[in-house]
Image 1 (cartoon, rainbow, N blue to C red):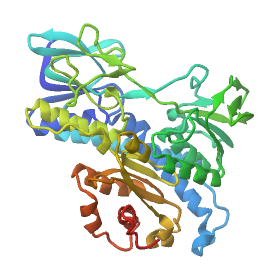
Image 2 (image 1 turned 45 degrees about the vertical axis):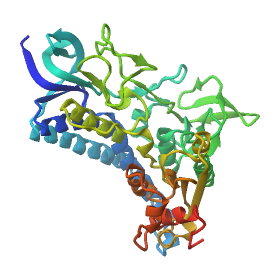
Image 3 (image 1 turned 90 degrees about the horizontal axis):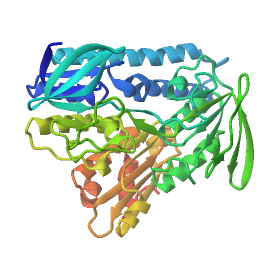
Image 4 (image 1 turned 180 degrees about the vertical axis):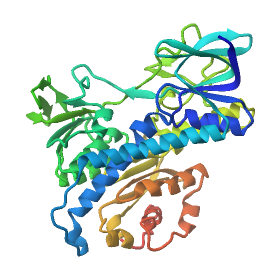
Length: 469
């Protein structure tokens, strides 16, 4: 087949890949994207976006059952699960189509198929594209970015079967609402599904092998989340060990050891949310200098793999496994390829968000890790109960926590739980990226009435200056 030449080819059309291709086109590079499934990747089609549509529906369902708090009454409140799922899929479809339009607008060529490295042609890299085992094209490029993402980790005995044991895919398109549900894993994915199904009325049990849920978050925030979820009716078992699973005709039974007790559990469905593994297979990495560690491609600060002309971004390149990290890496990587001066990403400046109820958001070091790193810290806390907007909204449960270096005033980390904190965390991200200290943050004027005022108060609280608590 004739070789089609490009300046850059991106393998994978997810939030890292398609953004990288668009930025390349903006910089005058002839770019192509190879994508085997849907443009937008897992994030847009089966992750970030459709789950937020589902969570929005569950928030509405929760609110409809608490209208009395706001002076309203409604009879026979119910939902149509098929319509809830359909809307979620429509949102994903609309945005996937939008990605296709953006690529076309920027004159990025899209190839439908799987891409694999196929050697060199002089200084240029070759990439073979196949679909259903048949050749589609052979591409030639000066540089190739691998952005193939990741997939759900599968544990022995917890293999998704499409009926009783679900991965995130099955959990997003239920044909009927389970009356009871077991979620294995309490990271962001597990907790978001637990929150969705609990808000929709299912009895939910969350099992975590570690000693607390949301283990990457600040310990204080994890504890507050645990308390909030139990108050909502969830059962949470930490430090847990799972026994063998027995499948019935329409349920699953197992034993769980936790807290010195053995719990016999029978539920309609199980969601396995125990992490992800990188899609490193069948990329043609054999015979290259590309190194794979724990299913992820090892890269340097500019996403270079060590093999000339080959880069890797996003989930394929390791944690944190976040769409916004992938997009930012895509832009940075392309600009480095184009010869521009770039600033490597500081992982501690990448925010993390969990869209459960209440929401959780964070950036930087936890209090414990700041102390482990040798910092003498000043910690500020401000509860939502002291914030007028939060009370007016009927959302008084929440906390903003700041961690400062006591000697330099550097904002080491910020951790939040409560309504809309996923929208507010960016304020602290900007502060860390701009290397602001407590002095600038104290002098920043926050609008009133907003929940964001709690961010200011949490800064003031670290220096014994909180005004409304």
